[in-house]
Image (tube, rainbow, N blue to C red; front, side):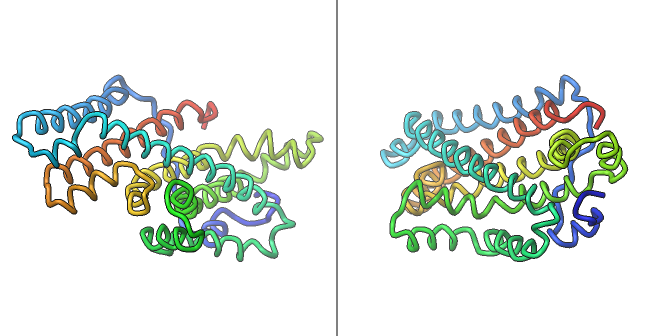
Length: 266
C-alpha cells in the first residue's frame, strides 16, 4: 500500500476504470514492422485512388499534396501541444492526489476532471470558442486538454496506489525520505500504468482534433468537412482514412516508447 492507505481496488472505485498496462512482451520482427507496412499500404491505396480517378477542381484543391501535408502538420501540432499540456497538468496532479494531505478535496478535483470527458467533444470545443471569445488553435488546445486529462490523471493515481506497500516499507526502513520513496520506488513502479494512460490520451487527441476544424484550427478535419459540405465522397474518405492512419501511427509509436521506457523486470 501507498501513503494514502487505499487499496488498488479502492483507487479504481474512486477514480473510475483505469487503462490496464499490457503485459510485457518482446516484439518479434513482424510485430515491429507489421503496423508500419499496413499503414504504408493504406497511404498507397489512397494515392492510387486519387491519381487514377477523374477528379474535378474542387477535389483537386482539397486533395493536393501540399494541402494534405499542411493539414497533417496542423493536426500533429494540435495533438502534440495538447498532450504535452495534459502531461504537465495530469502527472503532477495525480501524484499530489495520492498524498495524504489531499484526501479532503480529492473527490472534488476528480469530479472536475471527469467533466471534460462527460461533455460531448463538439460541444466542449464550441463552448471554449464562445467562453474565450476567440476561435482557432488556442481554444482547440484547451478543449483537447479537457477531453484527455482524465486518463493520464486516473492512471497516475492508480499506478502509484497500486505499488506494493511492503516495497515502500522496505524503502522507508532503509532510511529513505518520502521524496526519495516517491522518486525511487513509487514512480518507477507506476511507469507502465502511467504510460498506458498517456497512450490513451494521445489517441483521444488525434481523433478529437478533427473537430477543431469547426472553429478554424485546421487539421485533417477540414478535409473531411470540405468533402461533406461539397458532397465529394473521395475527399471525405481520404480525410477520414488519413486521420485513422495518424491515430494508428501515434498508437504504434506510443506502444514502442512504452515498451522501451518500461523498467526492466516489470
